[in-house]
Length: 249
Image (cartoon, rainbow, N blue to C red; front, side):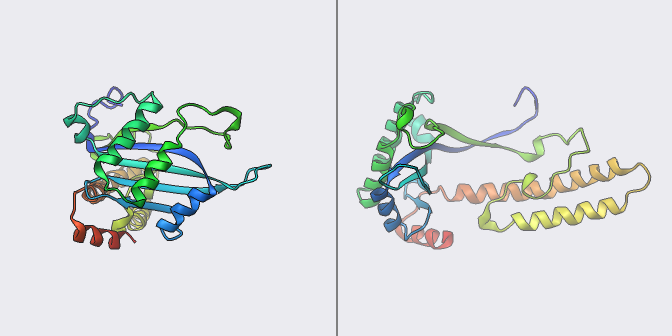
């Protein structure tokens, strides 16, 4: 990316994320649902800036005696822990990635039913393609990545003005702030006003003005969304953690 866009500003968010896909039996699916009050998408926030996300889908499988569920798990923790402990993980070695995730959970989470469930789920992750016995057509190995994004204003304007981006296609928003729909409406309004100024062959200039105004406004909101997301990673006490959970519901 830096080779194609020399002035690209890449921001390190200080968060490392581990993503996995697993197949679980019904009894484990019931345990997840009991902990999270029957929600298919669940997220738990730890007091040490870590978080655990699970998304469950029921997949009907022919000639199967037991219902099987596919679960996507995402565990994130502060990157500075790996730097402090001088730990290097081989991203191409699934076993190394999972063992590291388990060790971080044991380090950052207190012993409880939810922690035991998290460890149980990660212990089911296959370290290689299980072959024909795997109940799903696609297999994704565990992914261990540091989260990074870019400064939108460091990206040069489109050279081809036939491309028009608005709404979520132009800027990623955090749903907590409620800025996504607002920006999409403002983009559409701004584009309409610029197109009303279209005269003769001045269409490219109209689109260029739209892009310039849209980038300045939306980039500020993208930075607000980023800061809101990073604020969720701060270590908190029990009282502050309860307030954060109530805001996320």
